[in-house]
Length: 406
Image (cartoon, rainbow, N blue to C red; front, top):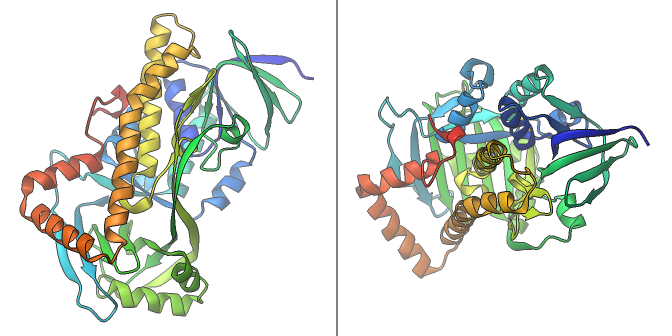
């Protein structure tokens, strides 16, 4: 076995959340090692074409870390949001709610950002930062924890010891399985078809959410005359549509999108993801903490998955810094419990909210249809309610950690 190395913090997973976590901790003077079983090139290929909705507070996080550069990141603001419904492709699209552009001093509540450009900026900072060590194409074989440290054995036969092990290894977390962690899971019996489109008309930075009989279809503006779509469908129907060739699939989209986009074509390949709610009941363990998708996976309906993970990052940084100032062990159970308590309400409330909205709008039950019609009508007429939902989407609620503040 190679010589044992000591690092203050080790992170499993070099995805968007794990990488941001490392940069945030390093910016505060902490030594961090990131371990990932894949190569940098593999991660780029796996996430090719992927996009995210980035909230205003998540933008603040990138600004505070010196990573916000709209030109390099090629972000597209979401200035207006339109909610509509239609029963079928032959039915007229019916307006539900419009969220207008916010005042200039606030800026947009959300932005669309592409994985390729965000990952490129994060990778550049990791390679530049001497406080961060990135170990690619290497697996964690075993970890052993005592009252002083966690020892991590790697597939290259090296050994690293650390005060705290932060786990950000994705939805199907291998570490969660290894530790027999308990999840609450709800299968939606839906899948999401996701992809990007080029089109002739200007999107004018308007995001659309169409509530269709099969499930919601989101149309989200990217830089230039390009758009991301996220189409949630029952498994049987979604599987059938997803397997159609590109021409047939475009025709399916045209039938449902209507006149929102003109003369559009697919950019690259469409991707298919199963949809479910997966919620880790206990995000901490002995000197370990789960963040991002390894702790929770929610329905993409509200576009909050990445933002939820970035709030994990900002909150954990706050807690660890306070512990460091007090001279506490960074992996102490008391410190990690503070983090879990702080994050629990946000995690539970957002998971519950997306679950409720999906149930409400993916159901043809007469009573639910009446309830959603009444609710949307009330929302459209109330500036106060609209302001509340915009602030929720922007992440501006509750006790915010420092990195999320402007």
